[in-house]
Amino acid sequence: MECSFGLTGKDFVLLAADTSAGRSIIQMKDDENKIKALGPHIAMAYGGEAGDTNNFADFVDRNLRLYQIRNHTPLLPAAASAWIRRSLAESLRSRHPYSVNLMLAGFDITDSTSHLYWIDYLGTKAIVPYAAHGLGQYLALSTMDKWWTEGVDKREGIEILKKCVDEVGKRSTLKFKFNCILIDASGIHHINLDSSDPIAEMEQAGKAAEVINPNPPLDVGITA
Amino acid sequence: MEYNGGSVVAMIGKDCVAIASDLRLGQQSVGVAMNFEKVFPVNDKLYYGLPGLATDVYTLREQLRFRVNMYRMKEEREITPKTFTHLLSSTLYEKRFGPYFLEPVVAGLTTPTELEPKPKPFISTMDTIGCITTPKDFAVAGTAQDKLYGMAEGLWEPDLEPEDLFETISQTLLNAVDRDALSGWGAIVHVITHDKVITRQLRSRMD
Image (tube, rainbow over the protein chains, first blue to last red):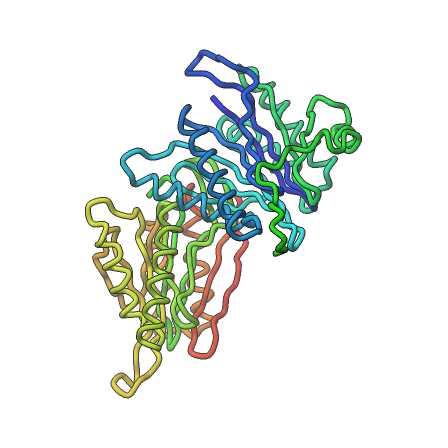
């Protein structure tokens, strides 16, 4: 069983995914990172069938990187979501469909808007302010319904996310650890949900909290 | 069909047509989004709705956008509702043995021509593999189909003016989706007339 959350705010997006890896009732790992940065301001949380997940995430990552190398500009969140959705939809009607559910979060630096896309293995795409996959859907969507408001700031956003994580801890028999990132205009940052003030910790850590961009812009003497 | 939920209805009026859908996107009983429109424009006199499996809503919409654009460039004119219905039908039939899980509804007005100086408002609907029906009154599709039939049968009357048609289609949709657990969460209505399209979002019960 897996669980991931996404939440948008005024000038940021949050993404959290559990870190368990295993099969049926056996857990083999409790520190698996299921969030992947796909560019300077875009990341996704993914889950589903064991081998499919990493393979599909790599496939997406490489293709987005190829786009960036060819065009000297990263794919914007809306375009990336359309490409990923189509990949899954085409895969669905193939001989070996990918069984991957994901949540794509991005910050569009061209117009300073945050984006969150809920995508399932069928290629269903929902453009949402907050969302959950897996167990979190049943346990914490109502928590988000209650507390989320238009234009929440970073601290409020993290408080809501913490409420969701607590809800899962309280109502589920499984023990989850969560991995969390925040995307804003300055890039992708790690968030320590156990900290009393994760935002202050993030700001203090500065560069150290930054998730390393897998697709750094290449200096080819041309600016897009 | 019942996986994501959703419903669409279209009605004929006097020199106008209306088409409306709910806004829910679900995953079985869980509601995921309340902004999922199922009705899309082809041009300013032709709209179509695609209730059914949400992944196919996107896939078929992309496919149709491509085909309509190709038609527009090759023919150098806008596609008529009748032609569009056949384009949609053959697109669905291409997938005869592995269909898109959609039941489309088309609604539009035909621009008068020399050959057809007084065209009638047009609606049509089809099944998952493209078998066309062209009703003279209203067309319904989606998870609240049976309830929509009941409401439309009771409320619709011939030659409604745009504002009355808006009221009729709105009440039909809202009261039908309130009796359906998989549809609802808001609605959107388009009334197409010869000189403008009136689009309104409706608020509805959110349970």
